[in-house]
Length: 377
Image (tube, rainbow, N blue to C red):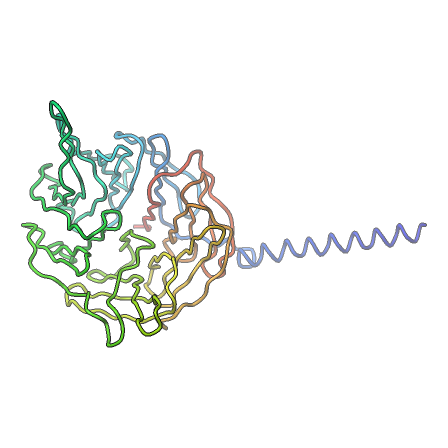
C-alpha cells in the first residue's frame, strides 16, 4: 500500500512538472524568451459608449485618457493623413467632431443639418491637406404634408470656412456602403471607384477624366473588381499616390472567381496585378513597411488570420483562431502585433508572426468606431 501511494505521488509530481514546463514554454513562446512583445510606442484611440473616446498607451496597453465627445455616441472614426486629427461621426449620422490627437481635445464640430432639413452622413473622405472633407450624404426636409428626400450626394465642405462649396449626385451604379474615394498626394485630384475610376478636380468638383479599369487585365480574363469584403480605405501605411488591395477577377475558362493583389499608381494610371488563388471572403490591411499585409477571413464558425507576402507576391500563411461573430482587424504601429476589436469590451492582441493569442486590453464599455493607431511622433 505504501509503495502504491509513493508511486502515485511520483506520477503526480511528474505530471505537475510537465504542466509547469508546458506553461513556461507557452510563456516563452508567446513572449519571446520572457520579453514581452510590444506593439510600438504609439497611441490607440477607440470610441466607446455612451459618448467617449478612450486613449490607450500602446507600449503599456493601459488607458491613459478619456475624451468626452460633445456630439454624442461615436459611429465612425477616421484619422487625417498625418494622424494629427481624428474625425468622429456621431450615432445620429448628423454631426462630425474633430479631435486633436496631441492635446486629446475637441477642436471643432460641424453639421449639414439646418432648420427643417436633416442631412444624414453615410461616409466621409478627408482631403490630405485638410482643406475639405467630402461627405456622402442625403437630406430629408420636413414640409407641411410630407418629407422631401434629396438625392444621395457627394458634398464638398470647406473645413476653414465651415460651408458647403460644391456638390454632385452620387453615381447610381456605386453602392454607398462600399463607396471608395482616394486622393492624389497634393489633394488636387479625387478618385471615385465605380465600374471605372472617375477622376475629379477637387477645386471645382468637376469630372476631368476616366480611368478605364473595367478593361480585362489580359486576354482570357475578365475585368478587375475591387474586393468588397472590406470596404474601408485605410492608407495609413500606403505610399502616397498608390493604392494596394485585394481585387477579384472572373476566369471564364474555369468558370470561377480568382483573387489577387493589385497595386494602383494613381498619378500614372497604371496597375500591377497578380493572382493568389480562388477568391475568399478575406479582408486586407497593409502593414507598416509595406512588405506584408494582413487579413481576417470571417465566416460562421470559422475565423482565420491571413498574411500576404507582398515582396514575394504570394500568400505567406493562414491559420484558424477563436474569433468573434463581428470583428475588425488593426495592426500595431511597429507591425509586430495584430489587434482584434469590435462588438466586445476587450481589444485582443495576437502575435503577427505566429498568430498566437497573447493577452487582451480590457475596456469598461463596448467599442464604437474604428480603432485608430497613431504612431509615436
